[in-house]
Length: 180
Image (tube, rainbow, N blue to C red):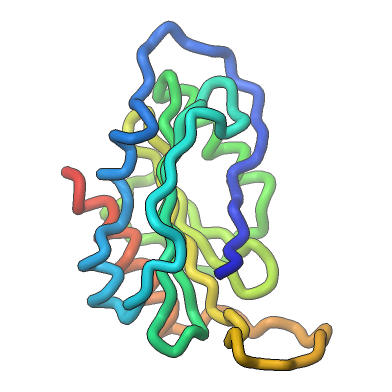
């Protein structure tokens, strides 16, 4: 499954705080059970962790991805640990100004900092800050079937449907709730 990652470089001064280890971030990701309840039955990318995200003040990250039974939709769960909550806020603010917004409003449960963005194509993501951690759930609504032999087209991608929006919002809340 090809999902666009949205974390972009933002310069933030390094803090003196300790940062969550990459392996411990795995607990912040969407659970396989929650993904399965939403129809994402196949782990297309098992949990991976890194201590080299490319962000000096947010060095550690974890992610995983699931695919729907039909193979036509995918979901990515990601968490990035920063050295300070200020660094996480700066990273989120960089995303806020650097990626196209959507007309949707993220669930209030994720807090006032939560934003929803479109990554172009057919990928939609909700980002939110939880202390020193920046989290995201991204939904790719148009994954070509692996057995398909389609040609490349330049058709405009339709906006996210209400049903897809509900799936994205539910999964973001599930991810946020799973580690509290």
